[in-house]
Image 1 (spheres, rainbow, N blue to C red):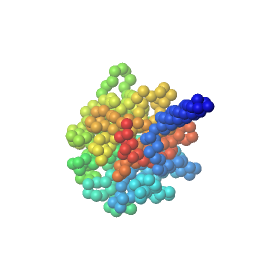
Image 2 (image 1 turned 135 degrees about the horizontal axis):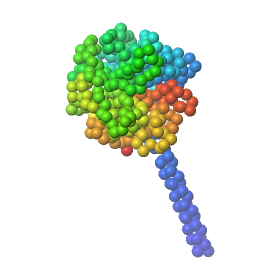
Image 3 (image 1 turned 180 degrees about the vertical axis):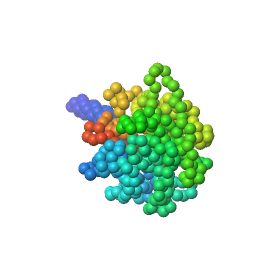
Image 4 (image 1 turned 135 degrees about the vertical axis):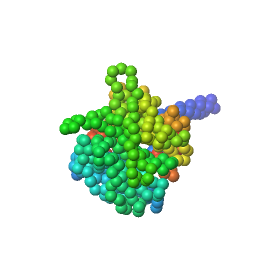
Length: 391
């Protein structure tokens, strides 16, 4: 009888151990399937299209002196195309970006013949807020303008023209691109597209140049156009949608989206007046813009883009996944690479970056190509600082 009891106990213990092992393996697989970074990252605001609002496009953030955060984006009313009618709308957060107001406030009425879009908000060293946007009149007239607020965005000045009347053209200014250097210089990176007179066809090839101001936007100077390094083969890549970031040694790093398989980069030693030749980088991406800003808490650079290194064939050319990475050597290399959004039909691009006490807010396009125009929906994503450095 004692032997039968021992055998029964051994059987029970064995079954218990097997069940524990199965539970452990299941939990381990669940942890692999759901990365901790995805669980901690939150979609805090989504702006889907509707019948009378067919597109909500890219924008930018500004932290106000009372602690609120203002997000200004492009609210379309006349269609979902790049030339459709649109105005600048705003949403506010009073809790560091966790929640947002549910209705729009009109920030700037449409003062273009087609639309206004591509917002950059900048806290100037004077304490004023500068608002930059692209005013679109036609395929041959797209110009950046600047407005100033003395009362934290409640009211805005009349627009200041950055481009002189004799230099009118199609100048693309992306959202969250304008920066102010330590010296006080304001730098506006632009892509100039030479669309043929009388034609309604868009020329995808552009020339990268900067406009800059040393008197807080009262007057503007035109920088030199940047050359693109010639690549092997007859067909050369085209350049679009540049951005700039100031490095610790005072240089500017310019970066542009291309159809050459990566972001191309160039460097300026004179505050954006001239640059070295644009060359391929290790930021592998489709024809989609990247965003780079410095993390205040650590001094490292944060990169947000569509990481296409070793991408599967079915995702080539698509603006997915939404990826982040950190550089501790001023953009020479990138670590802590991870994906925040991986929907194969997602269209993640035109990212604005705003750092908070707890992490970073990313305002970006996040449409689903299986349901709508990929640029039709905007989203704000919150990423804790701990997640950025998780890997």
